[in-house]
Structures are given as C-alpha cells and as structure tokens.
Amino acid sequence: MSNLPSSVFENYDEFLRDLKERIRKAQIRAAVSVNRELVLLYWQIGRDILIRQQEQGWGAKVIDQLAQDLKKSFPEMKGFSSRNLKYMRTLSEAYPDELIVQQLVAQIPWGHNVRILDAVKEPTERLWYIQQTMENGWSRNVLVHQIESGLYQRQGDALTNFEQTLPKPQSDLAQQLLKSPYSFEFLSLRKEAHERELEQALVKHMRDFLLELGVGFSFVGNQYRLEVEGDEFFLDLLFYHLKLRCFVVIELKMTEFRPEYSGQINFYVNVVDALLRHPEDKPTIGIILCRSQKKTVVEYALKGMNQPIGVSTYHLGDKLPEQLQESLPTVEQLEMELNTAVAEIEAQSEERVE
Image (cartoon, rainbow, N blue to C red):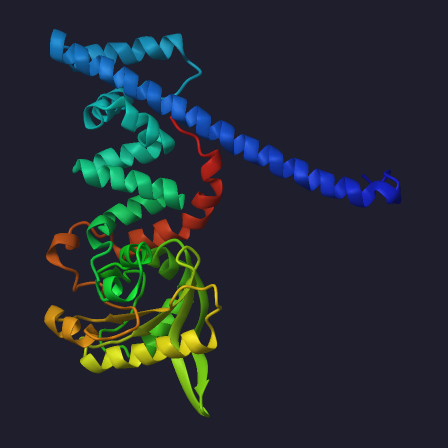
C-alpha cells in the first residue's frame, strides 16, 4: 500500500475498510446458513431413527453400527458419533414440528441445542431459551449460565407498577426487563456488608453485573450527582436501556424493603426526568434492589405512585429460593464461565458446530 500515490491513498483506505466489513458480514451469513442446514439435517436424521425405533425396534447396537458406517462414508465430517446420533433422535422427539425447527431451533448452533436438550425438559422453556439466544447472541457458556441460574423462572417476576404507569407495549417490555431474584453469585461480600460496599463491588464487576441485568443496559455512572435547588443527591447506579430508550435508576438496599424506599426512588426518577431525560426518551424507570420483600407491603407502597417503579430482591449466595438452589453454579464455575463470556460472544459467528 506504500506504493500507492498519495492522491488515491485516502479513497483506497476507505474502500478497503468497506470491503472487509462486507466480507465479514458475508462470512456470518454463510455460517448462519450452514448451521441452519446442518441442524435441519440432524433433525431429519433423528426423525428417521426415531421412526425406525418405533416401527422396527431399532436399539443401541443399530445406532452404533450406523455411526461407524457414516464415519466411513464421510470421514471429513464431524457429528456422526453414536452419542450425537442419539442427540439427533432426542432433538426430533423434543421438536416434532419441522416448521418450529426451521424457524427457531435451526437458528442457533448445534452445541447450543445440545445443552438446552440436556438441561431443560419443559417444551415452552426450551423454546424460550432458544428465542433469547437468538435475540441476545448468547455464547454457549452464557447460555449455560443463564439456564443454571434459573433465568426463565426469574424473568419478569418482580413487583412493579408498570402496568399503571407505562403505556403498552412499553409496560410489558419493562416488566420482562426485571428479574426476581437477581443473582450476585459473582460477588464475595460479607453478610454484614454495607450498601456502598455492594455498589462498589457491582461496579468493579460491571461486566458480570451487566450480564445479570440483561442485554440493553448501558452503564452511565455510580453515585451519580444530581442537584436540586442547591442540594446534592447521589444515585447509587444509573443506566440507560438501549431497547426501552430510557434511563434506569437502581437503588441498592441491604435490608428488607421499607415503604420509604418507594418515595426515595420516586423522587430520583422525577429528577432524572427533569434534568437528564431527552424529549424523545421514554419515561425513566426506578428499580429498588433489596435483600427481601413482603409482597403486600410493596404493593401498598407502590399504589398511587405516578412514576414507573419496580422492586426486586438479590441474593449473594445462600438465600436463594429453594426451587433455584440446586440449579445455581458454584462461584468458581460462574467466574470461570463469565471470564470467557466476552471471547465467546466475539467468536460466536465463527463457532464450529458438529
């Protein structure tokens, strides 16, 4: 490129950048297309195996023989092991409708599908994780973490007044935004930790915190300063949600929910709307994260509030509801998975599928 005349150098550089971007996009489209065809092929193979098992009594020995013969015929292809053939059969059994396979199942990599088949047994929940993987671009490790943390059960279960304070579909989207409880397993805090320690720990582990909050959150700042008639007020955490197009104020409490917390967050939301909100932004949302809550107390506290407020809980390790305790990874597993999450997301478009 050094031999190029200076008069064309600038145009060439711009052309090269554009060309490389087009090539990358074409590679991604090709990878998605190949994956779609591969998963559909696997589903068809699994369906045929399932039919023959039901009609002709095929057993494990026949599948083992089939695996050997396919490997001999297609030595350059992976994915024809006995284990994988059994997953193909399970895939077909789990999703008998080919249209669903084409529209959803085949849109995510085979490795993702295998993990969903292994870890999720309820059909509606399986499809939900597939849709979330498609929408959020989850890597395999992130998907596993979300399943193990019980995201399906936690999503949209926080107590809010969104239905009364936000128009549809904003209210529905905002409701699904909140979880209950939030999992802060990636933190190592004493039970006696203060709110400021929790805040600082979350800021220090912001990547992990953003993963737990969900896709769309953009961090604006912590202890964000607001001034009203000469008085200073500091928000624990301030975010902007790219999909909802609004600011999100999060207040952290190390205690059980108290009614006065709703007044505080209502004040903060009003001030953010007055000082920071752009005319095109949607109404600011306030979220109170506390150690525990009593449903009736929260409902009374939010009744009559004009601003959209949600109340949820979090756990730091050993106060998770019983139905989720068994599904949570250990701290070590969570840290290991989250440490590779960014690399996995960047490499997802090039990820090999069996």
